[in-house]
Amino acid sequence: MRTKGLPALTNSLGLLLVMVVSCGSAIVGAVDRVVSPQATSKGAVNRSIQRIITETLKEGEGVVNGVKVWRRVPPARKNIEEIRRYGDEAVSALTNRLNAESDRERALVVEFLGLLGGRRIIAPLQTVIQRDDSPSIRILALRWITQAPFSLVSPIIREASRTDVDPGVREEAQKILRLPRPND
Image (cartoon, rainbow, N blue to C red; front, side):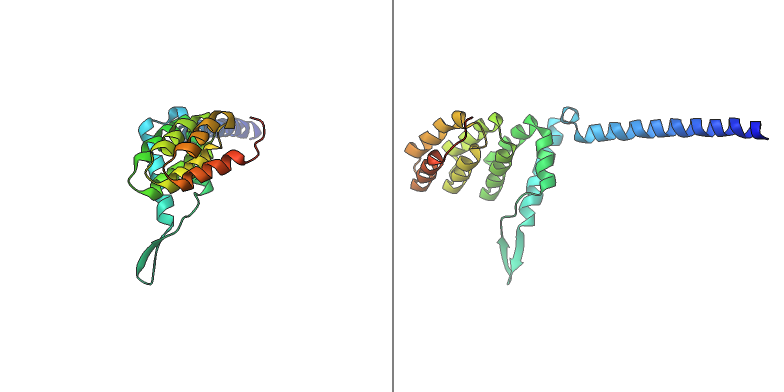
């Protein structure tokens, strides 16, 4: 009886091992497809970024005494992490949203770019600093562009401090230039 049980046990263990390996491979493959930026199409990144922007903006909406109100809600950590996983593709997708009609949306996009940091945010934030109609969004972009190497962004900030049409933007740029900076 013992010999009959051993082959059955061996077969069962072998079947279990095959199932574990198969399931493990499927799970790893699925996780890789979800998280890997290389496996993500540009369209999927754009849709994800738009979903995150929409969700974040909706979180601040409400009604008080019958009046529709909005308050700024910081982006959720999970959304920031998701955007960071997309890497350079996130910069491209976010840059496309800098032309949105909504000041709130453009401000949120500037924040997401700033949270990404590094050299890759310089060009889109420079465009905002130089061309956005809203002084408050230009100020926001000035603050966030400092998340890139300061030696690369200081000429942009210096130009804004001298040439921006809004005195508040010029003043903010001057304040940023006066801040002590660690070596880049």
